[in-house]
Length: 417
Ligand SMILES: *Cc1c(COP(=O)(O)O)cnc(C)c1O
Picture: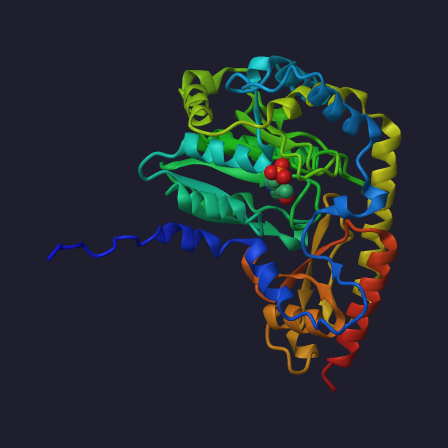
């Protein structure tokens, strides 16, 4: 008789661990509670994808840029690794507007969104025993991709009472000789905070003391509407070298277009000297590229979008953020410390003692989905148990509806004390 071996298809256990950091997976779990006989529309206050709302439609020039690039038939082939030179140049110019020195096209690599930029950078930095410092709360893709890359993770806190600034003393305490980088997300996801210039400088000085680089996730760059203006971390690249990650997903409201970048803000050439540039290039070589016609559209998107689009977007987001803050802070079971100043999100703390029959953040979100068809992100996936992340970047009338339903839900479940 023919002998056969057992099937040896076990799958990757790391990917299982990584998926415990998946926002999409947790939201899918929350959504299973939705009552299909509720005729009201579902209000998605969980993920930041405003593109589904007409008021956040990307500008015509951006659409035309993509159509023009596609119909020219010049961009049907492969692009060079690192991206089309015109795309790299346009990103360098776009970012240089806010820097005290000029980036060159060689300082920029075009990626398939900021998410792939994270992946490329983490792969480039990985070596045995290396660890990376991540903010808590933060963006779980960093945890997931660190697990997949076998890069050890250590967390530093963002201090809620200090407007979510980095706990720099705590950060220095968790760093050691194997620490290679720290990540900051500014404007902040999930906290909606915007770091001051002064704080960014202190971050750079801390990184310099530790001899590590700063990964500055600026996916929400320029999406600010409070008193702190957006200052890119690259401004302090002369103190500690910075890898800036960005994309058109959020500012242009097109997360499905999948174009982003990595930019080196490193006037002293530390990355070159330390071999990081070579590692980033190799990491790019091992990865896929952004679609060539999308790369070709990038110069027009970055250069031709006019201020009226940016202003309109910011005005809606500011109105949304203010409404969200004002309404939620009136509800007894929530603590909202500060009005969000940027990005599309903020964090709200639940006071469980003021709620009856609800024991944690997941249960709160599940029951809310079931009774009111409103979706919030439970904080546990961001390592913030009994907090929720609220996305306010939606059509204002839908937000108003969602906030009224949240209020009704909280009043209905308020503990009788
Ligand atoms: C959305 C997001 C990204 C990924 O953006 P894409 O360009 O769509 O890949 C990266 N970082 C943060 C903090 C984000 O919120």
